[in-house]
Length: 148
Image (cartoon, rainbow, N blue to C red):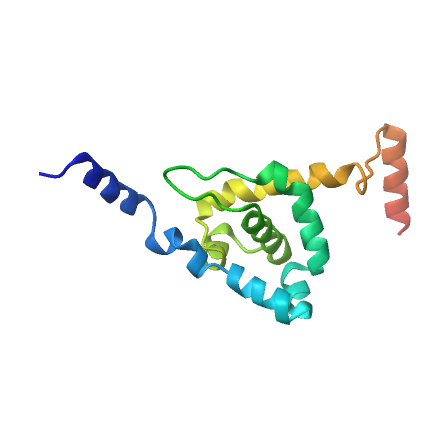
């Protein structure tokens, strides 16, 4: 007769694929750290930004996207969340496709990517993103766009 702990272990194995549970071993983070150290041009190509820009952005969004580890599992780090989001934005790959390089389930990516995009918007909007506030301003933007 199985005890409760064995039942929960079996249930956990059925809910998660083993290679996803071994995210640190299988994800593209190892490649990214190698590129960062030895191939800065490839790092820039991979994330579409310089190393220092990536870490500045990470420092800004970390408080909004960082999660705590639990007894049940280790959280997906803020760095992994930002990298997955930037790869999604750079490539347009589906969550199902992206899960293989990130070693993060498609379901988790479906939560992580919108949350991280929102965090990027929130931290950058004051300084870099200017939005028209009135109808007159919007009409001027439309007119300028048409002219271009």
